[in-house]
Length: 85
Image 1 (cartoon, rainbow, N blue to C red):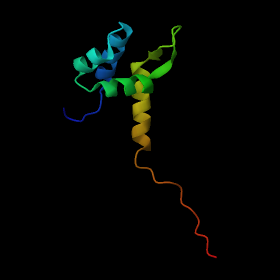
Image 2 (cartoon, helix red, strand yellow):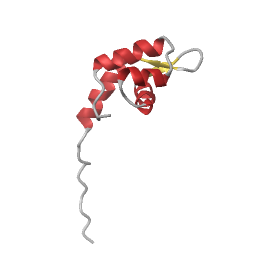
Image 3 (cartoon, one colour):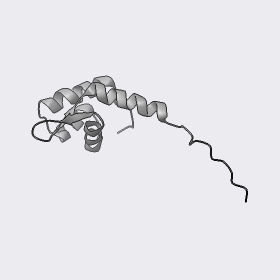
Image 4 (spheres, one colour):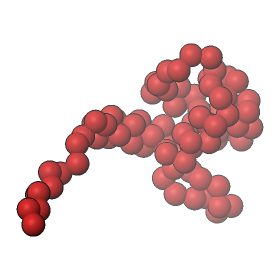
């Protein structure tokens, strides 16, 4: 399995399958990723919990979170002043 980013189309497919209560393992097989990727994706795209305590997944929210993480990637920490004692 090659490493790759999930696309918006992948996320929309995850959302569709997740809403139809498909098992995570079956969603992973359908998308072509490992099951851990699905668990992380559901967590990253969660917009709250339903009445049963199950995360509510939104492909759009997950895509926005992904884009924000890409923007922050590689940032250097704020410069620190050198203390000469």
